[in-house]
Amino acid sequence: EAGVAQSPRYKIIEKRQSVAFWCNPISGHATLYWYQQILGQGPKLLIQFQNNGVVDDSQLPKDRFSAERLKGVDSTLKIQPAKLEDSAVYLCASSPSTGGYEQYFGPGTRLTVT
Amino acid sequence: DQQVKQNSPSLSVQEGRISILNCDYTNSMFDYFLWYKKYPAEGPTFLISISSIKDKNEDGRFTVFLNKSAKHLSLHIVPSQPGDSAVYFCAARGGATNKLIFGTGTLLAVQP
Image (cartoon, rainbow over all chains, first blue to last red; front, side, top):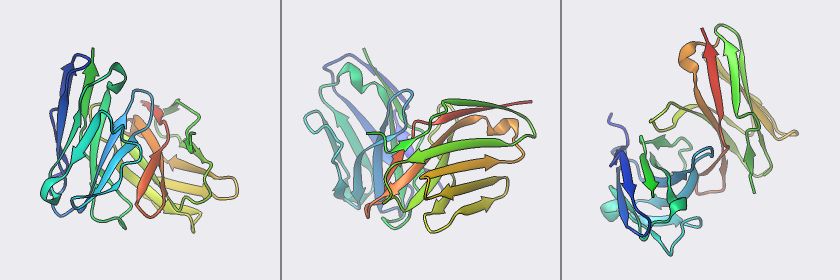
C-alpha cells in the first residue's frame, strides 16, 4: 500500500512570495490533515478535511493560508504572501475516517522563507 | 496553552537498557493517546496508542502506561536498540473530529 505522498520535499522562497504544497493521501482515506511543524515544536493542525469538506480550520491563518481538496482526494495548501515565521515543515496526513484515531503522515515539505 | 507537554527534550540510554519517555497533559477530556516516532527527513510514524479507559497497552518491546489521575503517560522501550534513536512525540485526541494535539517531542539516543 502506497503511503502519503507530498511534493515538493524542499522549497526556499523569499518573504512576500507565494508557495503551494501538494498532498496525495493513502487510497481510500476519507480524512486529510495539514500540519505545520516549526523547529523544536510538535506538529500543529492547520486544517482537516473530511472528503472534500472542511471539518476544522480553526488554526489556519486565513489571511494568508488557503487549502482545498478537490474531488475528495488530492489536496493543496497555499501560502500567499509568505512571512519569515512560516518557515517550517508542512506535513500532510490521512486517516480512514474520523473514527480512526491513527493518522498516517507523509514525509513533509520543508519550507524556508528568507 | 500547551495541553500536551514533554518536559524532557532529550534522553540518552545504553543499548539493552530501558528507555522511559514521559508525557503530561492538562485536558481531562482527552480520550485517546498515541505515540509517534520520527526519523530525520521523514514524517512521524505511528508507534502505539492507548484508550483513556485503559492503564496499559503493550506491543512487543513497547509499552504505554496511562495514569489518568496524574494526567500522565509514559512510553517504555525494553530493550532499547540503536534503531530506536529518533524523536518521539506524544499526542492526545481531543473531540469528535479526531484532532490530535502533539507534544514538543523527546529526542532519544540509544548508545551502542
